[in-house]
Length: 131
Image (cartoon, rainbow, N blue to C red; front, side, top):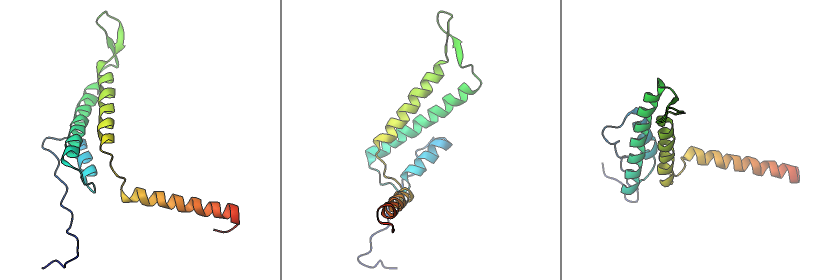
């Protein structure tokens, strides 16, 4: 079948998730690349974020049966070092994903427009008595 001139070509399929990602990291990859047109450098940042998610999942699993307070080098009670590591890796994921400057999906845009329209109508009623 011949494409009609003037019709845009369909967008290329999103890139597959990198090899070796866990379930949550793969889900994150799929959620982000679906509907986003990411450059090569942005895909690399996303892969780093996904690998961090895998690392966080492994640390979280290790921490599940472990005590939150352990003995420090001088015998004092200290927080389990995994707690600090988890916090740092979660912050890194947030920074990596934030650097992608992802656009909101269409539903979020529609929701925002609906809220604006509702506020506009409420203001019309308040000031003019009509919507």
